[in-house]
Image 1 (tube, helix red, strand yellow):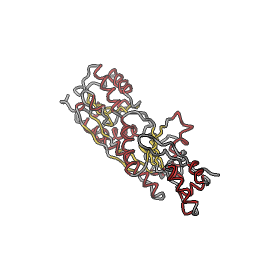
Image 2 (spheres, rainbow, N blue to C red):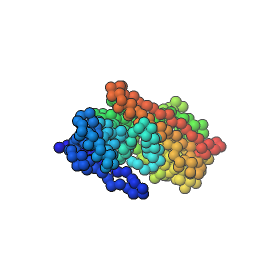
Image 3 (cartoon, one colour):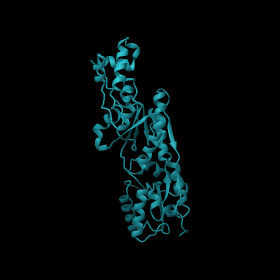
Image 4 (tube, rainbow, N blue to C red):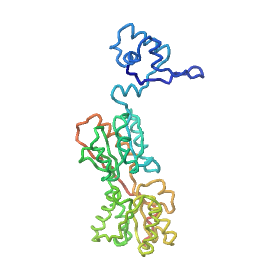
Length: 354
């Protein structure tokens, strides 16, 4: 006999919570099987009178309320969307999740969140794509060579990818317009320094955002007639420590004084700022500095940090909308939504000229 997973939490009386009532208790009270109770709830036309009346009377007497998630699963949909992120900490992911959750709620869905790391490579596919509890999944992929790309492309579940454009592989994608924000930032910095004194300090090599921003940086300098030297583009980590490490080395090589730096995120920029101050090179008088992401950190540091703003909440919301649209129209062509970025100018890049 197949049991129904439905259960309830019971009602509350005057200051007292009623005990939980199970479908088994309803079946016992009505003198029928669990399967009959399940049919009476989900397909009442398949249950004959007076059996249906007895089941309904038992439900009313006991105060039984079926679990809505269990009912949805039996109906073939859970109204639950999954979102898999490489990490939860930090303002970047917090704001992205906030936008996704608010949009899911607005559309009548719940959001199930999980984390994924390269160290979990053997379990990531099943954890993200094989839960069986979700109607579709949003996956954050920042490396186009990540093996998870193949798993998402080959999955039969509706999916949307954030940060990497997989629309050519049939997967709806939501990405940032890195070129626009980078170009605006570099052109701003080149108002103050020669292209030969401009540097990009990015995140990991292979990270899609780091690579796109580096390419845009080099393209703007090339338009000014300057071909980037190898030392003008560096890749490392999205961390304060990496920014400090780069800046210390640049100062030792006499590259930092009278320079302009575009950092791959605000944390890297803060590392550059701290190392420059330790070397008694003042921002922005001797070093012009722009970060990326426009997090709260950019307004807290002194001098306030110029930064390229990313619409993080919009990215989360756009991914949810794209996933719901994919679930409703499985055969439609895949699309890529590109979200605009913009430079927010503050004190770290705008003092008097050298």
